[in-house]
Image (cartoon, rainbow, N blue to C red; front, side, top):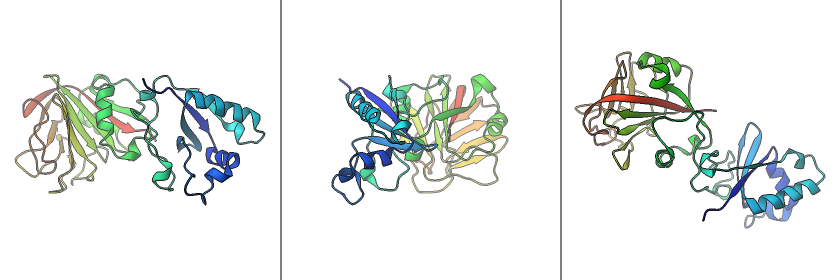
Length: 276
């Protein structure tokens, strides 16, 4: 049976722990300095994940303490731990001593996805950079909402500087796509980094990471979007109407075709980005 959790929100949580137990949490005490809590900072606030029975104890301590730090705490019940912010990384540079993974923690989505569910997101998150796991994800393009237009897809991403997740469902009901380190845009040259990868649920999950053979990560023009290349075809190619697509094995990712057939028809498409 899983453990029930609550989230404790605080502006100066580290200060509180030092004040409460300086013999445990001061930097000089290497052996015992790690709090048995998980936290991250966001907009000058922190989050700690604790077991519910411990949350009650902390709440009592806060009510008994007379200091300004305690007034910044708030207990928030989390009914579904898979739908809370993923807290597996903090903004601190203290090293791994201050990091603990929360099992099954998934990024928060700004909207309901029409293409993937929690089990899809769970697989994908494990392959994404840690920095993308501590922020909510926002839907920036959807064929169901914005229509089928590559030009609109580019326009919706104008000004973005965060990674994007492209998810496709074709008429064979196969779900696949790509994680790109850079938002999609029109460019004369290829762009992106080795964090970019292709993936497929066909039917089992498969991630195709950068092979190191070339740097043809992403290319885009008004006629098509291309991800991966260097061989006889692109790892993933979409036309300007976001209707026809193709997926071939390519040296960039050493991938297999992402769908049942190399050429496919797009039924639905979504693009998500990190909301900072």
